[in-house]
Image 1 (cartoon, helix red, strand yellow):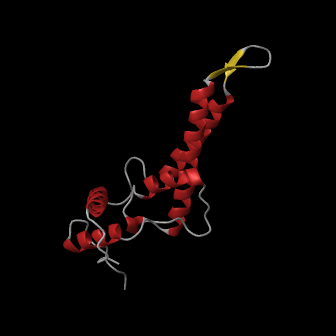
Image 2: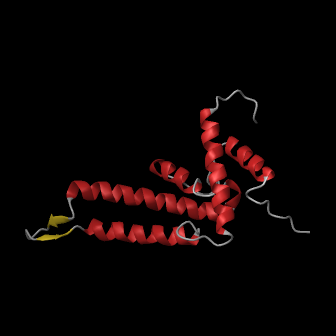
Image 3: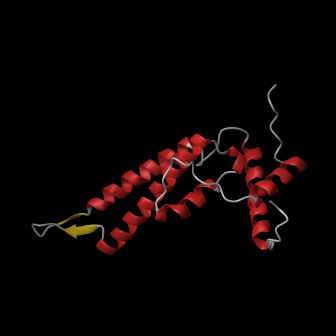
Length: 153
């Protein structure tokens, strides 16, 4: 028998969300490598959804998205330093090749976000997803404001 999905506006959903926010952050699967600079992007990506919406396959894609976002940021910092136009060996101004690299990363990030249903309208009942995500954000805020007294495991 299939289990029924809990409605996002029910008391049991609120309890489930509070418990999910109280446990440690979602980590990437063991076989997925995140570089040092990817971690902050990872946290942003996985917080875009409620904890119970992530499958292991989604987490692999989330790690790829986090790496891609970190690459975009790195390329943009270099572009900010070097400029969009650079002088080539012949002394002519040309478009910095990093511009096309950054654009490729941006397209890849958009494709990954679409695959993860993170941009625009998500599949499923949008109101339930939005309500569940609001509940989880509120639970995270509450957790951050509450001192850790060791009562929650």
